[in-house]
Length: 146
Image 1 (cartoon, rainbow, N blue to C red):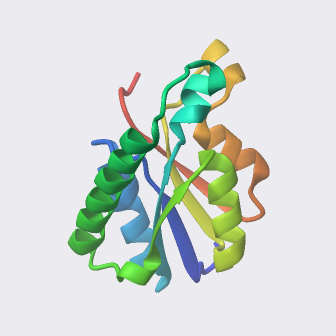
Image 2 (cartoon, helix red, strand yellow):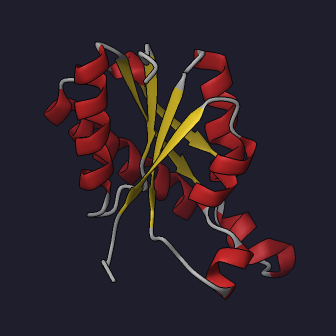
């Protein structure tokens, strides 16, 4: 088993993030690795497309501020330095890959709902991260257990 030096935990700030962070903190301790936290805020324009003639900038700013507050709370709880917390905007899988490369991370930890069938074919963030990663990826099973 490789000795990881820099771990990137990508979280969605839901209640399920706790399971991902618990695993990430354990792995970082076990390997003596530097732990980085990441949350990616998806632009509302990606979710709703350009078809709705509305200005989402104020709502987007509120989402950004809420995400920053939540990320800070997780970091404080795990005693992670502010410089190791990253809040980005864009497509989650692409932003995770880019930050991983920029940090020189050798392990990405994400949550996975273990989707099957059509949901798996349509893809998920964990699936997108796995298929484009240049390092190891640990998908932590979250949500309902079958």
